[in-house]
Image (cartoon, rainbow, N blue to C red):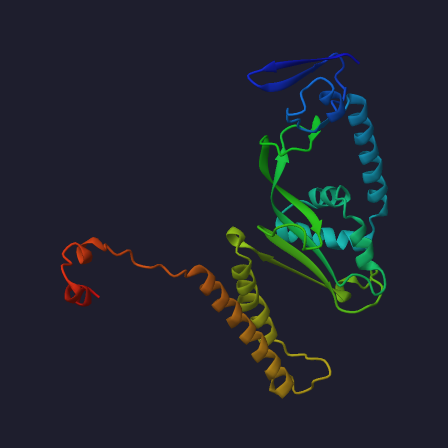
Length: 273
């Protein structure tokens, strides 16, 4: 492949006789002075893009074939909670690179939680090239994706599934063994979202609970009362933490000139003080 390099206003522009050629740092340093900065970029050929798309399609169809009653239960809950169609949720799940976490959630003594975020992420306008430098050609777009909860910033809606035991999750027991819930993070305020979730959903449900399993006295039991008190206290901690963060100290700006302009002697300084 023959490539020509031209300078325009100090910027290096590459023109190649082949659409799929890759410009590497070593090829540039052969024709540029050592002090010239080089941006690393990888341009995929049309054949490479077609191959990647083909592989992605095969992977998606393999995952689609794995979907059973358990997956359909998750998809149904997500579709109802996030207001998406079940087809949209299914497509998002089988396209996710963390799809294997679902199976790890189903196995005996598997993952205790399965998290989904539904929020704005930056999408590239064009995927014709993959660049190592940050691109400004991106737009926010809502996306549903699987997450561990520790790698992505939470800015939208969190949907979660929690196991209640270490039993294997099957299509027949998933509704009894798995709990589903959601909470929002308005304007990126996680504390406010948690506070609302506990105060408006969790606590009212707990206080109206009639069946506490082996605890026959129910709400009259001292352990149950201590538990509910601890939950109330936790919500109070969330509320005070949020208020401490939001209510920042604002110091009043003072015009010092009116105090120092007429200072003539030490006694004036004392009076001003």
